[in-house]
Image: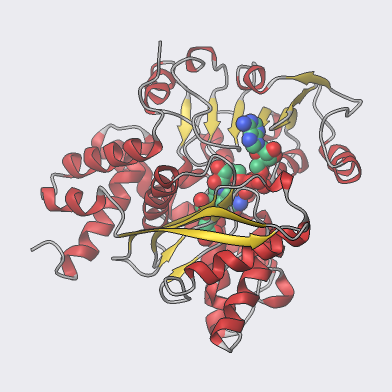
Length: 417
Ligand SMILES: NC(=O)C1=CN([C@@H]2O[C@H](COP(=O)(O)OP(=O)(O)OC[C@H]3O[C@@H](n4cnc5c(N)ncnc54)[C@H](O)[C@@H]3O)[C@@H](O)[C@H]2O)C=CC1
Ligand SMILES: O=C(O)CCC(=O)C(=O)O
């Protein structure tokens, strides 16, 4: 069966439409939320190491700022398009509102393949991108952060470039920075930590002991590798992991610290001697308790959803499950922790980082982790209330919490007359 719901922007629009209708809100709410307030497409010229000039397409989208400045990551990936960035920004609006953060949703990216660029080329590209969007971002306007193929080093170059343009250190411009220049303790781990936290809570409700569970993880970057490490430390058996080049499977469980050391030395997962090779599609269909998709959108579709055997799908990635797949998983009794909650640990600790930058007062990692649990527990409780009140999936319930909050802000601000 072909899956008609692969365009993430159309999916995001449909989800907002359903939420506005379910809540019985005025149609004007959907008219505002169905597209971003501002979408920028910029040319990013930079000099290659061989002296030639290359120009990439860059994007920054600000979906809705009723609750505060827009916030969301920057992705460097060859598949980045305006529609993808719009959807990612819309999902950020939902995530920030659900978590009760004083932000709207934003997102950005550059269509490029970082594997083809040297480190100095990535630095020049990052600095040029910031020059291209410097007029539309800022600590009280729109605050970027890491996403796919971007990291604290890239955030450092970007905040440095912006600070040079402004003529003053502006650490609150961007989050996910190295700790020594205003990064927050716990930000690198936050998304994976939050995902494991939310999954452990749901597992308990379903009578699954997380510490005895079998887990498969697609994507072994910031989100997937941290989720693997924390799950392993809690005693769970991580039986499969993967990256864009394929996966590894050991039904007896993979020693994650050993694999991380192997990856650090070899810069890849492939060839690890204590697990069998497995494809990404095989990994998704393994007989496990918990599946963490932590790579890209559209991984669980109408085609493979009937074969998913996990009892819980905890979405670390943004948009890994299509709406048709969502319906199939629901019918099979598989619980899905929606991305807007599952991966919300990242933006929540980004918010803490921004607060620390604005106040110049820095917190310990324990304080960060404790507040992260408080914010996520509150959002989960509100999502559960909507889930029960309207009898809808957790994803729809998350949208109901978020859209009600954004609509309230727009109403007070006089946008809905
Ligand atoms: N970094 C963060 O704090 C947050 C990330 N996310 C989302 O989590 C997902 C992963 O992001 P990061 O871990 O930050 O990125 P990353 O760049 O650190 O890692 C991405 C991983 O996915 C793998 N991958 C790429 N394409 C793949 C494919 N087709 N099949 C299987 N694996 C593939 C890569 O090889 C890599 O292991 C994205 O959807 C991102 O938007 C969401 C919230 C916060
Ligand atoms: O940390 C942030 O501000 C945003 C992270 C992000 O891009 C996401 O949650 O998808």
